[in-house]
Amino acid sequence: MIYDVEMTVGGKKNEMDCKEDGTIVDIQLEIDPKNLPAAALNAIKAKYPGSTIKEVGEILVVKDKKETRDHYEVMIETADKKEMELTVSLDGKIE
Image (cartoon, rainbow, N blue to C red; front, side, top):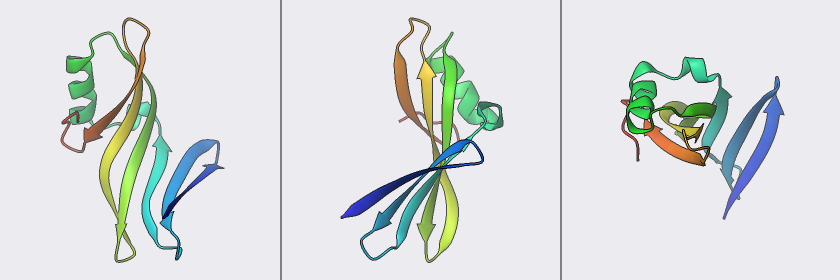
């Protein structure tokens, strides 16, 4: 079983996925869209022209008690006003 813990820290949304024994699986930290790496930003603009980035979550995977940046979850509003959540790799690939 995995528990999803949601909290607000300094006005930003954060989440953690934890196992029953308290082991943290991953962490999602809300970051300012302007801090999204250029590769990810350019991929989003190319695939969804005219879209607006509404929210960005930086996903950190925890292994052996070490946090490693893994990918981004990005909420956009498309040019035709539809909301979509994208998974974007560090090098800009959209899954």
